[in-house]
Length: 457
Image 1 (cartoon, rainbow, N blue to C red):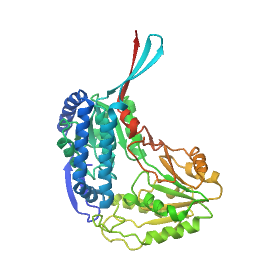
Image 2 (cartoon, one colour):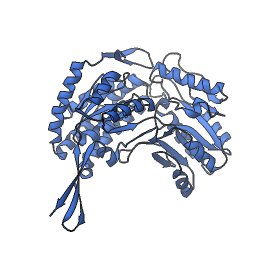
Image 3 (cartoon, rainbow, N blue to C red):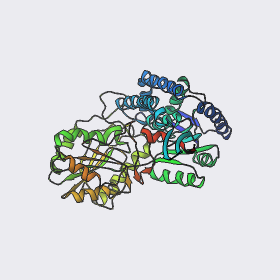
Image 4 (spheres, rainbow, N blue to C red):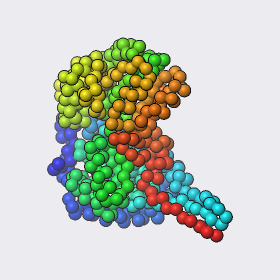
């Protein structure tokens, strides 16, 4: 990797390119981050909250402009991009309102004349390594709680979305944060490895693939530094025999095809009771035939291009291998633009266990249908994956849904809802979907040092 390139995935034109950060620039960023973090750690919660509210106001005020940057960099529709910006603003509001109480000192009486206090202190400088699929949200959802906890954040964006990260950094500066609290680094993998081992960096967070997570976790482990990993997912969407397909089909479509199918919590595997498979396939095809492909800035577009050419090529290869091994195509959209990194919406069935469509995460608009007879088979299918991020269960019998949920190996279960993130609640998975939590109180405490204080009177 010699530079960071922002290429419009619809027009295939170059938006901008940036040279890698030099060693001098990285060292300067570390010095500036240390200085800013020391000042920020001594800033009262109510004053930190003022900066967060100002940042939220800027995000809302400039939502259209920021959404256009995201669409031009990674191809998401303008509607989805604007929703991402507004959701990012909600993170600022939540932590501005609740951080002080979440991190308040807790005292507990142990025995006569002895008590214990739990206090939360900043770690220092947090290194954030981020993907391209939600170029604002992914940064905000960990950077804001890290900052509200008194830390500084160094941002390493994905190489294809540098403009989004720079735009966010500028908003931090405008919102009144100390200069250097959030800085963008166009770092190489080698430079990131050096940063992780640098004693100035206190902790690491990464959102990305399980391969990247494994590499970064190994480096952080060697340096004995805390880390939060939010990695891939192959989320099951379990449709029980009593489910009402007509009422859930829109949720199924949105859950799989939002963000052009490029979301870690998108439903990837639709585990459908055999009595409903034919009807489910019919409804899917009817809906998918109506979807429009094209310019993500056009409000009539439902599905835009994938973010990069290599992502399109890799997805095509995964589908091709799955078909060669016996998978069948229920539906594949025909009329897609000839230019741009488009992949047609595709529905697969009869998926062999040894195929990529069964064992790998398909990051794009491809939906897999896995039928079952008994609910025990559905649970076995849901758990037959290296991932464990989220799961959605659709049934009219809530007790049945809860019973199923208790047997699913994942970090988040949604009954009669699609899997989504909400600033109020912890977000994260298990198995090779990572460990640690973002958002909610847990996301704030993730980058704080828990100090216990024993007091004898």
